[in-house]
Length: 432
Image 1: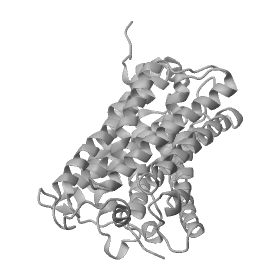
Image 2 (image 1 turned 120 degrees about the vertical axis):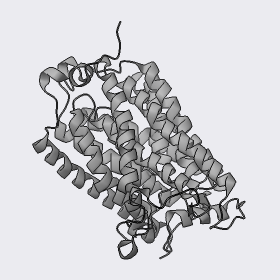
Image 3 (image 1 turned 90 degrees about the horizontal axis):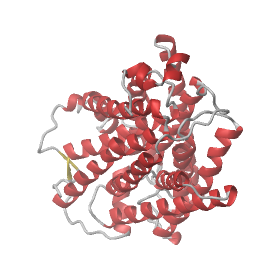
Image 4 (image 1 turned 45 degrees about the vertical axis):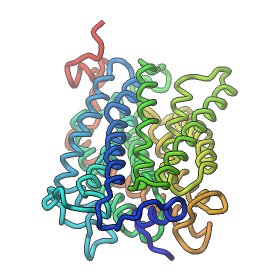
């Protein structure tokens, strides 16, 4: 079985498409550096303001500021933890423990300076780029527990989840850990971000219980225009997420950008047509949700599949996520407030599995990471999915139970009725 890290497999994808960089691995490449700097800004733009506006418009007006504040505070908190220990434990050399965890050589980013290199990039740029992924993953979880979770409990959960779930999973897949050595393919976060964050949101929603009135009381988005703006920012910013994950300014980045765009477009159209057929009219929210589903499902595959593969994955995203959302919300009656697991969790899971199919060279992909062909790669992908889901779900459950005992997870009934903006922050989103 071929043993490949994320960066080395990206290099093979480059050779399989358009290899244009002649710089040595230990020599700074200015073009690659400029692209990753740009991608870093794009991915950060996805969280604040992109995800903040997207989620903010989906909740009721009495909770809009709480969502915006959570996104901003998570960005700040994760950034400080990334500096202190998370980056070092996730992406530095772990020595004898390399299969499972990084080392302490970059604790508090000591020794990191303008001359430090990570392959052909300044390590400062590499560190900052991966920080934006670490920010986005726990910010996704906010949508599953929206409108009813205590702010103090959420902040505590994010800190613990980052260190106990995101950091080890990131190392296993992208830091040269045991899943990378097994040949798991995750180009831009299908496992590390979407599957891990999505299942954590589902666990949180189930432990908190439904919002007051769910599912009998309608809880429509208070500002679909805000959601549309946030969704548009996500679509644009996602190119930093996918194309930036090539870590080079070359053909592999171009392939990732093209497949990402096609998947988002196909997801939007598929969701729209299904909704149109079932309910008689297409909705703006349906188109936006389908687009986000397409973005989530292409994440693990973006640089490994061809344009046709991206289109097929987008169609799958629009259909699978549509029916999963209705099943979870209306059949199981689980109040995952903003459908995080249905869109991002399921998208990450299915996309990770489909990566093992559409990465085949015969289907226009860059090739598989393991020897043995399609079924061997699918087995490795399924292993990655199973491990990440079990780890994130288990740690999230234990962490939330601990926080419930120490702080309490849920606001009181009166606070939920008045809205979290007033109850927790003494502010209103609108003064009309």
